[in-house]
Image 1 (cartoon, one colour):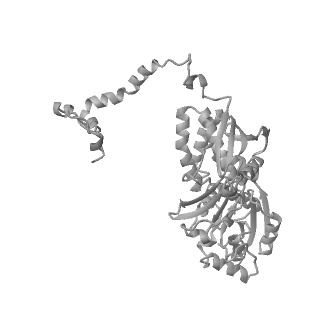
Image 2: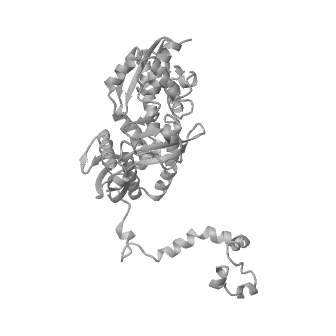
Image 3: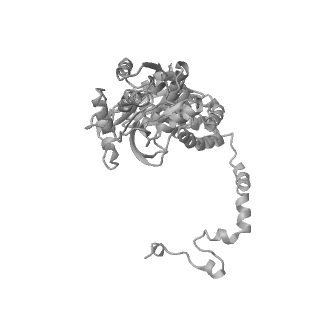
Length: 428
């Protein structure tokens, strides 16, 4: 049965601008547009008016920036979640929150269907629909990109033009751009050639590192249990902290990434990312952990980090495993409190100092100078016990161990053989 009321996650971009009239033409019923404010620099009143003029029966603007920063961004930060060592997951983190907000509106308005503008080639379709399945599996899901006969962005542009709907792209510059509080991403168009260097006009949040100031800038970031709480000694809310660091980092060219990544659906894609504030926070948080976490916890956290990032990237935000990891992080981050001084210079962010009331670093233990708290004689017994399994294995399996040696030394003749000269060792 065709839905009577469909709630669309609406951004005002090319895809969702076309979807409103398409839904009306192909499914009928009411279309409610939900515009979710996750920190993108948009005129939300204008977007709302555009949704209505495009045929939406109602349009809602929902501000979730604080929830985005507190519950999503800072959760990923505590986990040091970075996908494939480079991507700080700006889009991937926003999608489950946008979809959750969409579901909340649908339930409040008595809707019987949900729609999104994600393509059939991308990750976002998975992120939206796994959220729907977790929070409202009873609602019908409409994914126009998997149904309609529009095969390209050029087809969409022509479709919109034929119906008098203005769209923010042209055939000459068909970039796909996503921006929120945490990052800005650019895909498609000229970037589809991975050999082609990205042009400066692809960036908006950061200056080129070559054009960044010649003088370094320092910023002090205070954390409480793994969450940022203050900048340069002044307490602030999460949204303001991220926005301030975006401005500071962007001015120094910090946070640019140009990468080819593995999408969940199996293909590789090239993306340009700018995450200046996020890069600074990741550097600071990871550095503070090195000061406050014991070795075993720190090493286990390093194991959790890439898996946590995969869960976010793969759309599994509401999975039991992600929630279980948060349980570990709740305990592990209890002592990640303190301040890190970060140096910003020519596209880099590096820790320049750190202090914490929970610091496990003890100068009188680590010093190369004279100390009265560590007996170096104790190291002999420790090494003997630590090496016991190795010695036992070597005694039981001498033939396996001796294979590791340059010469097996199995006979008196071999033991008497002279070691190769320098000339011989070079193959001369």
